[in-house]
Length: 89
Image (cartoon, rainbow, N blue to C red; front, top):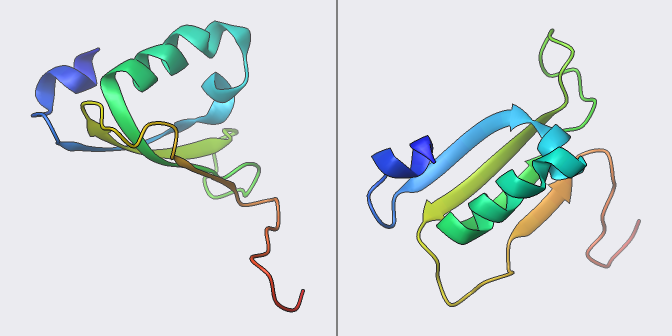
Protein backbone atom coordinates (compact mmCIF):
# COMPACT_ATOMS: atom_id res chain seq x y z
CA UNK A 1 0.00 0.00 0.00
CA UNK A 2 1.55 3.28 -1.13
CA UNK A 3 0.40 5.31 1.86
CA UNK A 4 1.93 2.88 4.34
CA UNK A 5 5.27 2.93 2.53
CA UNK A 6 5.80 6.65 3.23
CA UNK A 7 4.70 6.61 6.88
CA UNK A 8 7.08 5.71 9.69
CA UNK A 9 5.82 3.20 12.28
CA UNK A 10 3.39 5.10 14.47
CA UNK A 11 2.89 7.78 11.79
CA UNK A 12 -0.62 9.19 11.53
CA UNK A 13 -2.75 8.97 8.40
CA UNK A 14 -5.60 11.38 7.71
CA UNK A 15 -7.49 10.38 4.58
CA UNK A 16 -10.48 12.06 2.95
CA UNK A 17 -12.04 9.86 0.29
CA UNK A 18 -15.33 8.45 -0.98
CA UNK A 19 -17.26 6.32 1.51
CA UNK A 20 -18.11 3.67 -1.08
CA UNK A 21 -15.34 1.30 0.02
CA UNK A 22 -17.05 0.97 3.41
CA UNK A 23 -20.02 -0.97 2.06
CA UNK A 24 -19.45 -2.36 -1.43
CA UNK A 25 -18.22 -5.90 -2.02
CA UNK A 26 -15.21 -4.75 -4.05
CA UNK A 27 -14.08 -2.64 -1.08
CA UNK A 28 -13.52 -5.74 1.09
CA UNK A 29 -9.88 -6.07 0.05
CA UNK A 30 -9.14 -2.44 0.93
CA UNK A 31 -10.92 -2.76 4.29
CA UNK A 32 -8.87 -5.87 5.11
CA UNK A 33 -5.64 -4.15 4.05
CA UNK A 34 -6.39 -1.10 6.20
CA UNK A 35 -7.11 -3.26 9.24
CA UNK A 36 -3.92 -5.30 8.73
CA UNK A 37 -1.65 -2.28 8.18
CA UNK A 38 -3.07 0.42 10.43
CA UNK A 39 -4.44 0.93 13.90
CA UNK A 40 -7.72 2.54 12.91
CA UNK A 41 -8.50 5.42 15.25
CA UNK A 42 -11.65 6.94 13.76
CA UNK A 43 -13.90 6.82 10.72
CA UNK A 44 -16.29 9.70 10.14
CA UNK A 45 -18.82 9.07 7.38
CA UNK A 46 -19.96 12.51 6.21
CA UNK A 47 -22.70 11.02 4.03
CA UNK A 48 -24.72 13.33 1.83
CA UNK A 49 -23.72 16.53 3.63
CA UNK A 50 -22.99 18.42 0.40
CA UNK A 51 -19.65 19.43 1.90
CA UNK A 52 -18.12 19.43 -1.60
CA UNK A 53 -19.63 20.43 -4.93
CA UNK A 54 -18.60 17.09 -6.46
CA UNK A 55 -21.13 14.27 -6.29
CA UNK A 56 -19.21 12.29 -3.69
CA UNK A 57 -20.15 10.96 -0.27
CA UNK A 58 -16.98 11.63 1.73
CA UNK A 59 -15.46 9.76 4.64
CA UNK A 60 -12.59 10.84 6.89
CA UNK A 61 -10.34 8.04 8.08
CA UNK A 62 -7.78 8.58 10.87
CA UNK A 63 -5.27 5.82 11.51
CA UNK A 64 -1.80 5.15 12.90
CA UNK A 65 0.68 2.97 11.01
CA UNK A 66 1.14 -0.37 12.74
CA UNK A 67 -1.11 -2.48 14.91
CA UNK A 68 -1.74 -1.97 18.60
CA UNK A 69 -3.22 -4.02 21.39
CA UNK A 70 -6.38 -1.91 21.33
CA UNK A 71 -7.75 -3.59 18.22
CA UNK A 72 -11.38 -3.10 17.28
CA UNK A 73 -11.84 0.11 19.27
CA UNK A 74 -12.14 2.42 16.28
CA UNK A 75 -14.62 5.31 16.55
CA UNK A 76 -17.20 5.11 13.77
CA UNK A 77 -19.67 7.91 13.36
CA UNK A 78 -22.09 9.04 10.69
CA UNK A 79 -23.08 12.69 10.65
CA UNK A 80 -26.59 11.95 9.43
CA UNK A 81 -27.37 9.63 12.35
CA UNK A 82 -28.05 11.40 15.60
CA UNK A 83 -26.48 9.66 18.59
CA UNK A 84 -27.15 10.53 22.19
CA UNK A 85 -24.98 9.81 25.20
CA UNK A 86 -27.77 10.11 27.76
CA UNK A 87 -29.42 13.25 29.05
CA UNK A 88 -32.18 15.19 27.35
CA UNK A 89 -32.88 14.50 23.73
